[in-house]
Image (tube, rainbow, N blue to C red; front, side, top):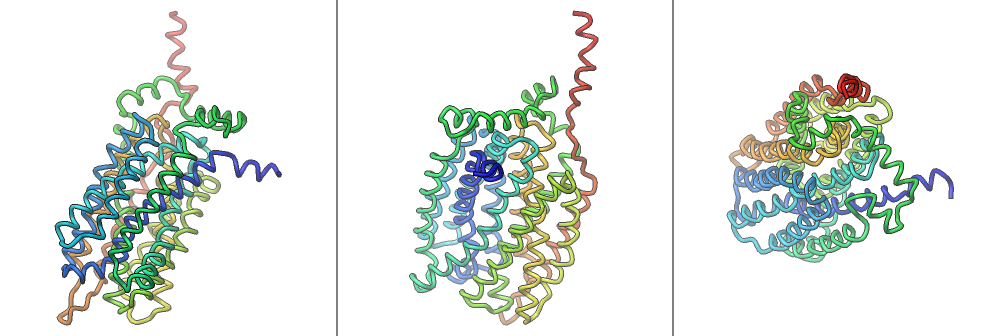
Amino acid sequence: MSAVASRVWQYRYVVLVALWLVYIINYFDRLAVLIFLPFIQEDLSLTPVQTGWLASTFFFAYALAQVSAGYLADRIGPKKVMYVAIVVFSLVTGLTGLVRSFWQFIVLRIALGFGEGHHFAPAVRNISNWFPNSERGQATSFLATSWSVAPIIVPVIVTSLAASFFGGDWRPVFFLLIIPGLIGLFLLWYFVSDSPEEMRDKGRLSNSEYERIIEGRAAVTEQGEAVEESRKGYGLFLKDPYYYFYVVALFCQVGIYWGTITWLSTFLVSQHGMNLTQMGFFASTPYLAALCATLLGGYLMDKVFGRMRPVALIAYLGSIPALFILGSIGNQPALLLTMLLVSQFFANLNFGSIYAFLQKRYPREVVGSAAGLSNGIGQLGAFIAPLAAGYLVVVGADGSQNFGRVFAFFATLAGVAALCSFFLREDSPLPSQSQTAATRTPAAKRA
């Protein structure tokens, strides 16, 4: 085996792939509702505003769950938190097939949000545990590709199941989605641990890889008393003004992503008159561009720019015109598909790198909490954007729907994110080791 192949298949990559697969399973459950949204809207006789509330309620619960998820990941370990998350969101997804009213659906969407909301921060904490600082941008970007791979495969799979086996009925599909949850539990149990030490003791992790991971982490965390203080009160990131620029940018980016993905199937069916099969193709294909963009963003952050800000500016400034144009396209399928590809490329270019920002700026002892709080606030963007979009949809006298104002709103969010990214600083707020040593010298002399 070559040295390159040996390095690529070291055990930390096995853990990363397992986390990636489990996250795709997570997305099956949440995306299925959004894919079937125009048909659920018809079946339950919902207005666009009610549909917006139905989509957004999930993200309100999801946002609240982020804070407790980060705290629990730091306190009891990420693996236990993810176990509970998978069980909850799989059971709730199965129950979704039984829903008969708007309010029943609202309750289930809240429950699903709390279940799935306890998944992300533990996954980020696990990457921080398993990867040296120099690899976290690419590792997090790889995890983030699940957010692009899932929208590629989920629309095709769930619409094919509904069309081929259930006569277009969306309800039985949700019963089947319990099965991927069971697979996720197995992957988590067998392949993932909270620490490299556990897998080293089991013989799955070599001593050389273990030492590389520990040395890479030590380069960030061995910075004296500032790290110890951050463990006590998490004041390190709460007192950091750049953390709040980051949070606003994340709020806008998450709003753009979930705003577009929430309304995409309805946009294609209502504004462009597509059937179930056509919609499945047009809803999934743009995420091929999103997948490439997410990987490219992590590479640019780690290997080209060495920071997130240039990647973020390219992503957000490119999103503005793409989203404006997308909402104004008429009956032009080729142009529609092209702009879907372009808009999703730019909207996802910064997705992996924006989450790696926290891992590079703050010590791993508080990454779970920093990610949980920021993602909790950021996910409010996923609550507000789809809800606001429901009010911005223009309904014609004949019942037709136009989404021009909706995509103009998403483009505005991209502009705000670009402005916040311009002011970001990405160097660690902790003092350097030399500065720490200098501050200790007088005390050492007195001793």
